Image (cartoon, rainbow, N blue to C red; front, side, top):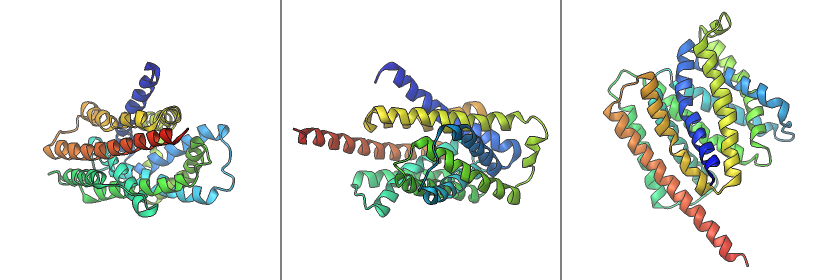
Length: 296
């Protein structure tokens, strides 16, 4: 991989890592997480719609994806940020990998061995450690975050069924369909969200713009481009740096406390996800070598 593509991968890592800080600041600006995500997705759809085709014949799974990924995943993850730190959130997001592996096992019948089972167990033990932090955090925020990550795993099932569509088209139309759902939930369950239109609220508008353009559009486009150009075994390891960057950014910029539970839980979760990723990469390399050997 040439230097420019390594730099692109590292830029993606930074953009995704800092997105947790952006979301935390944006949510705190109004205390309305569903409103924050709704505006973010509306912005994504508006920016992408002129450049992508309509998903003809795929509206039914797209509607399901908009609810599962947009409303449940992003909505509940940002709701969790009302009660948990950004550093804790960036660690919990790593549950997406073991949950997706489990979805593959129980939905598609994919097989894997003891090492990936061990990685899954480590990741969940790490998150359990985070939930045991000795601070006054309502359990509902942890539960919402875990359900949100489970929704991400389910959402991957629907994305797999729409592999003929361009990734940006999926992002655009699922965002457009999810935004009204989130805004409606916000109007019925949250307060003070309309204050962002009464005047310039920089913490909200700057952060929602960063999340929409920097994370949802720019970072995902670069990442998909790298995955298209290089084998998964080359690109995937960079993703392991996201929680490191996000954790460090939250501690440095938001001055969040460092607790034993955070450190130990984070290390266990990171170790579990790393073990899963390593085994996936090893399997990918083995399959690739087998295909090359079989090709005359």
